[in-house]
Length: 448
Image (cartoon, rainbow, N blue to C red):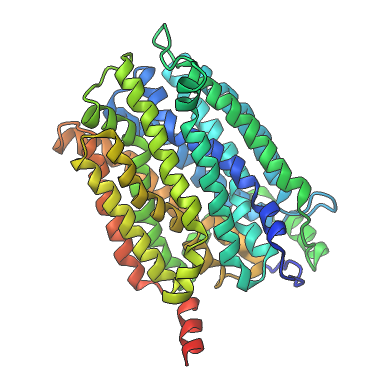
């Protein structure tokens, strides 16, 4: 692969500059949070069975597998004198995602909802993937952990609001959370509409308020784009999995088990809570929809905890290293998921979500902070795209086996999917011990 370098001029940015460049994640997380908290509810409302949910969710990780490395590769090789390198992808993704968020809750059949999930997830990934490389582009090494923490903060804030929207519309504004015809409730529809507006507004704020550094060798960038073409770029993107640096390989295993756990949680929390805590499987009943709304509140709480913890993580990392910080956070998440099995009072679910929130904050920042410190600047977007394989591959695995495991070994009881997820997150925590991080060496030298 030939070398295309970004500008070497990287002064420290102010708090508000980092704020502006990260603000788009507030909108992106509106999209993801609405998806994570409500898609299983929409699928079940439209007639999906519990063991079908993982396969129906397969659209999301497969879309990520295709889109993320391609967008990462081409965002490395894009430059426009006005729009920059990453911001064109932010804007295009925002437009497409907004359309998808308006269409999703108007699905009238299961197959329509699945197609909308494909469109929505692809669009969100177009915006999200370059944001990870954006931190590496814009910030010097000493500010990158803070940059990823700021992204985690906005992810948390966006998800708090978005996850709670159906509950808010129902309980504060009196909008019905039960559709008369057994379809998708108005509270969910209005949540997606507001989410679409928030997505577009927040991402475009970053596009307008942030200026990118030009590459040092624009002509070489243009020549490489012309010589490779789209198929050469696609091929190079997908072979990157065999060229990963050692630390990236070690982090890949941590990511695999972390995201397997998260995907199990996103698919099955609504089904597990409504059946295990609320004791109902009737999607047309008042109590089912109350339970589904409460899942949104639980997701809002874990994202709120993540937003608060995001700024604490860099402080802890300076004391004990980034990998140990990540280990401790993942242990909290594993314990949080496992504890749900023992809960019968819905309010106590919020305690479980504290552990999940701590893990979520770390998952969104620590692996990327460790990774960005060992990647070449000219291939930041490319490698971030390849690294995201280990977000989507575990989700594909989860989609392929969770339904089978529940049906074959656990009597199709959804709570066991959360137990499997909890065990997976504990395994991820233990694998952190194998990660070699540059930060460990720096801390050791500082102590000496």
